[in-house]
Amino acid sequence: DGGITQSPKYLFRKEGQNVTLSCEQNLNHDAMYWYRQDPGQGLRLIYYSQIVNDFQKGDIAEGYSVSREKKESFPLTVTSAQKNPTAFYLCASSIWPVRESYEQYFGPGTRLTVT
Amino acid sequence: AQRVTQPEKLLSVFKGAPVELKCNYSYSGSPELFWYVQYSRQRLQLLLRHISRESIKGFTADLNKGETSFHLKKPFAQEEDSAMYYCALAGGTSYGKLTFGQGTILTVHP
Image 1 (tube, rainbow over the protein chains, first blue to last red):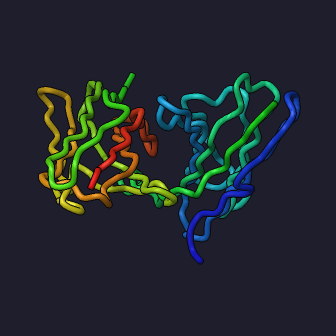
Image 2 (image 1 turned 90 degrees about the vertical axis):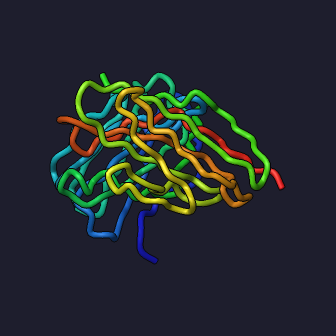
């Protein structure tokens, strides 16, 4: 089954703990993205990566970190510094160059709840 | 800064009625506009992009630079059109970055 997988589907953590969300793709896409989805706010870009070992901050990167050691994988760590981490997180990927990158393929999402 | 506004959080119509989902944007250059859709229990996916000037599932959207709008329209709504719709904008040096609106939940009643 090709596509983007995110695990787990639901994640619960205590406040003050770091947590890592997994995102894997087998589409051979160069670019990968992390979004946060909150009711009434749409999708907001956290981080994105155009190639392996390189990534850029999106609009709301504070309190998050990422790595891109492999083309297929782009894990997101929600750190204890993120003030409001409870949200639905979506991972996406696309081909490059730029114009084609606007068709992004999304994973099923991970719902993170921090209490 | 670029921004996308979808003024309606919820939109309800009856089957067979016309539907228009509004999208307004602010961007100083020449934007590229898109509509993404998320059906129930499915993933978010691209519906259409303005440069293609195509009709997908009966939906069309015209970029109006004067009014900075990219409204999504369908003359006769179907129940299977019920979904969350996001308008998105890309442009300039924000390579690979899409700016999404807040989303509109469309419900088509039988």
